[in-house]
Image: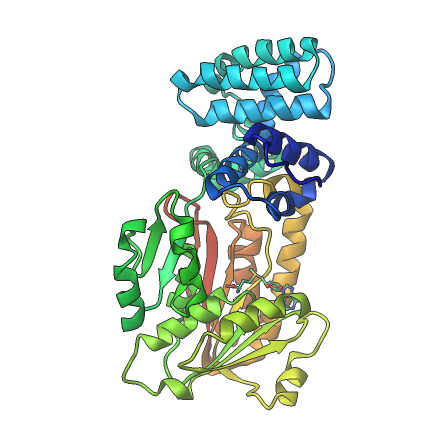
Amino acid sequence: MNKESPKSTYHDIVVKMLEEYDTNPAKADEIMSEQFIFTDKNRTFRRVCQFIFLTVLRNKLLIDHILRPMSAKKPSAKLNAILCAACAEVIENKEDKHPKIVHDWVNYAKKSCSVGESRFVNALLRKFYVEKDKFAKNLKTDDDLAAFYSHPAWIVKKWISQFGREKTIEILKNNQLPSDVFFRVSPTAEAKDILKNYEQFFAPTEFQNFYKLKTGHWSDVSHLLETPWFYIQDPSTFEGPKMLSPTPGQKILDLCASPGGKSRAIADIVLENPNAPQSETILVSVDTGRRMKNLKDNLSKLKSIKSFPIECDLLKEDLSEKLKTSELPLEYDCAYLDAPCSNTGVLRRRPDARYRITESDIFECAKIQSEMLSIAAKHIKPGGRLLYSTCSIEDEEDKLNAEAFLKNHPNFKLIDGKTLIPSTDNDGAGTYLFERTK
Ligand SMILES: C[S@@+](CC[C@H](N)C(=O)[O-])C[C@H]1O[C@@H](n2cnc3c(N)ncnc32)[C@H](O)[C@@H]1O
């Protein structure tokens, strides 16, 4: 992708990003970071471009749904990018800002397209908001909901049958909001001391040790992530470690551990028990090849407990052999399995992911998770506990998999379990805790 010239405006960059996405829809993340590698533009400029790009992705089906009937033939990639970016800005701004947004984009179109095309942009943009408003008041069918909230129709239908229409609309609305960034702060005196100097950049939350980053302050606090005490994590991802409640001195296995969020949360929970022998705790964190570097980086920040990164493809290699070779225990007091999943609980964070997942991915993930659960079960000692979690809200990957696991492993019982629906305060996630009875 061509990088921007020093004179590029945010219109230039957003249009370039959208044209690139059009030909490479699997690469939204790469497009966002590549565009700015050699930039001398400031962070605000970068944030504006990324925000508009993500807003287009989040509203892609809605924009298409409204614009398509207004144009007799398919617009060129550039023209389409201009229209989408302008509509995204209109969606995200109050009505009094719309005339200026339309004026600026029409001017941009005049410079970069033909006269006819810029007139076309003007005509379409002036009708977009009115049509969107009309559509909002007339959402009758499941397909209308899918188009209005820009989700594939099959997901909307599936959610309606699982959660009902009202709850589904809540999830859809929530997925359309730009996502917040949460910092989890370790429960240590050092962390509390540092935090005092940065309090103005964070808002407290109802979740202990979690702080919401105030808009526009990323650059003021990002260096805190280099320390062992700050980690970006959604509150929902702490539910599992809390439910597992590991204690000092235990042997703990973290499967599918990279980049290490759960490992670090587990270590912090152990640390909350300051009188117990921390250094006796053993944490073994397992993941596959390309993800090991991030895991090792994160584990290297854990100073109070003994941690061991182990590389093992759980579906192709024998974990027992790997543990034996590394002279690590075969049986554990507790294990965490944060299985790969369809990610339907975190679609708000990754607006492009919804267009990529298919219904069969959900069944494929459920099958892999079930295999991994059986592998994890082999490494739990009698009386030990196994926590199974996903970032999915699908029954197949949560509740049904938990039920099937219990049926196939009569030596385990369910202690606790729930699927958290995504809301403004947390992502969606499934969390199920089992105990080995004999
Ligand atoms: C949901 S992510 C884990 C997030 C991690 N637990 C955390 O809290 O940071 C799922 C992980 O499963 C790993 N994974 C997928 N297939 C695997 C396999 N066959 N063997 C081992 N790990 C696998 C992926 O590499 C990925 O890191």
